[in-house]
Length: 419
Ligand code: CA
Image (cartoon, rainbow, N blue to C red; front, top):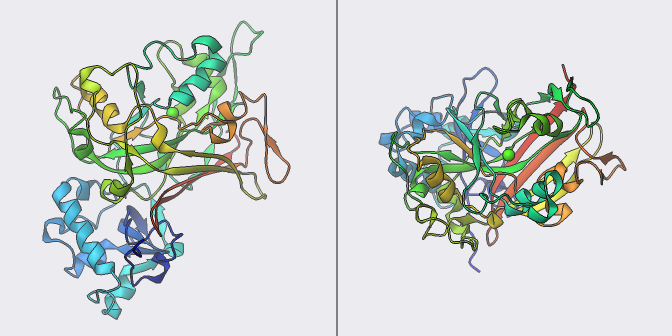
């Protein structure tokens, strides 16, 4: 094993940080009194790209793209500029380069401790689509809500099932959300009640951010799909199960999902994820031709969910991996656009809940606790069928390299009482 390449930013080299030289994820940050601008995470620091651009250290083609409140302007410049910028940042941060490390004034201006930075939503999101691509999740839910012997609906193995979600309520990690109110149909009542949700849940997902738009009427093939992706984030698709169960027939979830969706603040680029591509999962029956794929489109990403009641320690309640998803992101995008639907820069595409086959690998409490019937016990002895007010949900994920991790940081969110 060769030692991984190191940075002169010491905290990037400990093998545990999510943000080593191999990662360089993009985000939007601000410091006291300053405007939000583009930064890159390196160890426990944020590198201010607007400051580097002002100093003339970044590619000329990206000039002016970093003094912006979202990544959209940079993303719109296209893949050759993403690649050049990444190569430039890798060089500037490498242990054997002194152009930035040897310039004390610029270095002090451009490196901000992450603890002093406020992180913002990294992209302006024109549209949010959520898929349903874990066979284990779809089977678990089908068993509970429909028929244990025919848990998967007949279309599930043919279509990467999805629905159009709500972009306006996508929030960055750390944003607290109020428990939603809505219609709930109790089993022995003729009509629904209006009430705060009693079965509040999370859904562990990954999501890709569209980096290259497509034209109305022109499908994107599975082969072309990866070039349309800028990077990935972790996504928590908060879900009100009791509201969902009453409203979802016949057109799918609505208020049970639209009250908030949380994403992690750092966008990990497809370039950084390249070493962690894996073979696609076996699919039977063979998908229709427009869904068949040649390249390796699965990604090896370890994922965890922890629950933290107010004033208590966090307890891990789920460990799973992204690579087992039945439908890949390339197939999702090919299916999304096969009708002629176009996609735009910044569009957010959720994978669907990522679940394994055991209770401790399920990406939602609905599955882990079997709809609340088998509560989980947390480290302080508290039990949870679903989320209570004051609970914080913490999701994290990383790709394990040899001596380093390419990580996503965390997406956290606290539940406040209903209004
Ligand atoms: Ca979902």
